[in-house]
Length: 397
Image 1 (tube, rainbow, N blue to C red):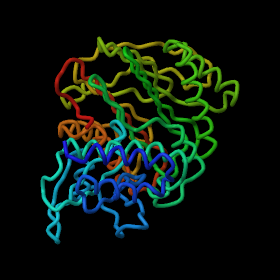
Image 2 (image 1 turned 90 degrees about the vertical axis):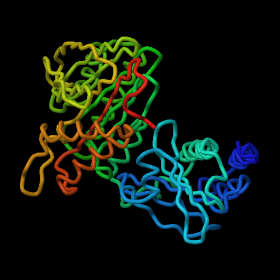
Image 3 (image 1 turned 60 degrees about the horizontal axis):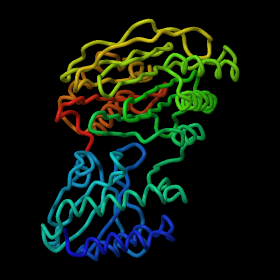
Image 4 (image 1 turned 135 degrees about the horizontal axis):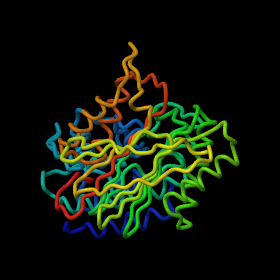
């Protein structure tokens, strides 16, 4: 351990208690100096996950945003690894991922006079404290939101993003990663998950229509799902409860397609139910095994029974959930993105052994690129891997 790392961590935590979000960049510089850093800068990933944007530090040097796909800092973010490079002045700059658990928030750029003055574990410890402070201070001001945004966000998107859980979650047995677009205009798509010692539960929703009206319907669907889940209802009873709430609030002229799933973490037993929604795709060894079809049923809000379906996963299996906005994304000449293209891209991304959030980032960017950012519908992808007893699987970090 670096000699002064404990003092740096204690000092950063103590000074943060009464700090504003705007104070954090200067505090990072001040306390990184305690273990030898001559400079420090905090970058947050932008909402589209295309660039790392510096958080302004009035007392520090002016920094420019850094692209994710072709830079040293971007590589640290993509691969979730520490990257080192010698600068023009001879100092060594170390790019350290900033993670809230497994959620990639951005990177820290730290400068030292030598290449190995601080151990990797110490750099990770300092970055972990920074991540906790970014996450907690984010609740008290808009700075971090504004840094990450490149253009105004619609009211529907504002509502949608406030409702979502973190886009990445991982334990030794299960990994979840998700992505939604259009970032600044999403409305009707949403997802949710919850994990405990025995079970992980995942739901994906696609509300009828677009914009704020669809966003309100999706919000009620997610809230009803969470309420039912937290009351201890089973899969089918939860489906029925969400169905009844939507019908009572919006009538039968408004509906939500959905897929709800429950995975037993000890056995790999998967239970799911479909309500007018595309079936999950089961991958094994980077190849599609099958689409988890079955009785699809009608969308939620129409008051009809939907059966529970079951499958036993093998360790290392991956499930891909998606909304129809993925396969129905159209290029300028009208070509659909299509299921075959999705399957091919997922297979190649999984075979790359990249971290789970990076796999999702690439898939989402492929959907965006196909339609050149001209969205006809919201598009959501959720990747779940059950790692079972395998010592290796899809990386989360």
